[in-house]
Length: 371
Image (cartoon, rainbow, N blue to C red; front, side):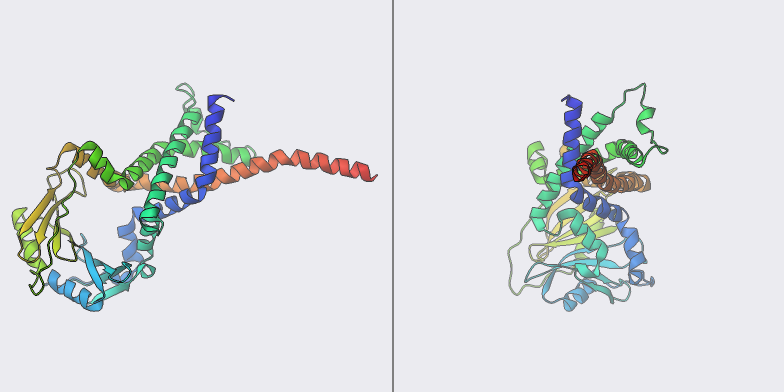
């Protein structure tokens, strides 16, 4: 057996073993590429009518907490468009189950509320990220990424026709028999999106093991400050902390607010213009009891290693290239779904075709013995 034949076998059996997972990842990834655009379409109530004044962030938080006294607010996401709702993410105290609440920032009215069953696109995100299985699911996704990387590289290696015949590698035998047509289409499409799948798999792997990567490269991580509980002491309104962060960072747009340490630490995320990364943020961490700043993380001002690690998510989600980047990612996802379906079918078709002559000979022998 030649090395090329060995690679073909490895590629085939890895694909067969992983076909279902690849199909899930590809199909969910397709939806998530345009997640922000899809949700307002399937949930019309997420579109609101702008008004001259907005309810304060503290007022929105109070409304959400009143609706879910048994849950803890973990994040508030502020949309770029003024006609969209603010999305709050919460976790129940009892089982840490996620809850999502959309609220009209102009009226303070909750327009959509519930667990993942009420948010199909968010449900798909959890499937894509962790297969609804928490940290164990994340590790499975990481291993899947390693295998997808191996398949993508081996597939490109086996496909490579040489410089002189490079164009021939993308030819599809449309007029051939069905098996030949699908086999050549599988090869050509796989080769065309192979580089995209390599990048997607590699960035997916690095996202799963991002913290070990930070340690390996000596990159600084995001602050994780803690604040001891002070029973009876009131918390500072979030709006005051947002105002302090914006005053320090030139009035940049509020991107999101994150709560940790049971709400005692507030991280204010502002859009950062100090980084070429499109989703770069300036993060200010505050003690919510006294308003003391206890940490910062400004995109564009970190070490090269840290900035490089922060690019992983940007590349993986296609945000690096705007609409073009996301369209490339969408194309890769669509083709991955097709490869996940055609690969097993081609294997089954080939296996059936090989058995057919044996069945014919067996039937002939049986007919002859009956005579």
